[in-house]
Length: 339
Image (cartoon, rainbow, N blue to C red; front, side, top):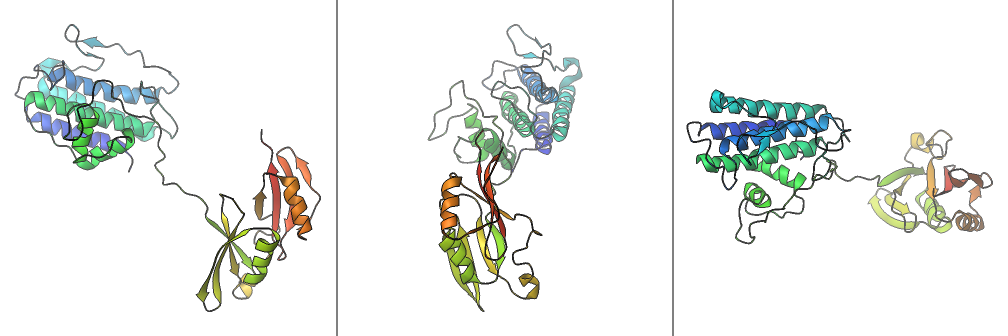
């Protein structure tokens, strides 16, 4: 499942809930193993959330946007988004919540293919959402350590971030533990703690499962007559010929060595289907047989008495000639020109 704008909002909400339990603690104590204070680390989360959204909003800008940032302490973390300490932790939580909402809103309206700059590679909307969730969860872990409050985020959310940003990281005991290890926070029984320099992968992912057109149905008058032409004359491979009962068969043929779709040869059942034989596309060329050697295949097919409806043509896109099967289906034999 992809990482979404709703995941950004959920991550921020879980962070605020956890950290609110430590509102009365020392917010200037170090956040876990970081050199930053708990307060500065939450500002850093908010800063990242806003920055990731802003980078998506300016896809033509090829580096980080020149937003001015400043450190609260000498040598400290520089953030452009900061919360006035006079407003207390609740003010800080409000800044964090608003920053998450800004990133979520931009993720929702960013068109596919639009990316923003990041040092780990340009990030599309999903990667930007995943980065925002990652920064929120892992740095909330740091702050929770400094405030001595528990934080245990949704494992499904952690798993989605791992799948999007850390495809090379194998699972450990649970997704949250794995994510902490991937970000250099902990060691695991079978894995030492990752050294500084670890990084995630922003490369775009296609959220859809891989698909291809597997079969195209061709209505024919008779199974064996169709096999005789497509296998014996054209030289296709007989991929399958399975009896289904009641005279029906599952007959599949395909060009030898091809990687495209195969043909399901379906014997017509009844007058309505019989009327479509040879004219499934209203007289247009229905199918295209691509070849890497037009001249050789054209000569071989002529020798096998395949009926060509025209002389070969040499078009800007390649060499082509229309032929027909014995049932009236029109094909292009075509060799596309390589630019």
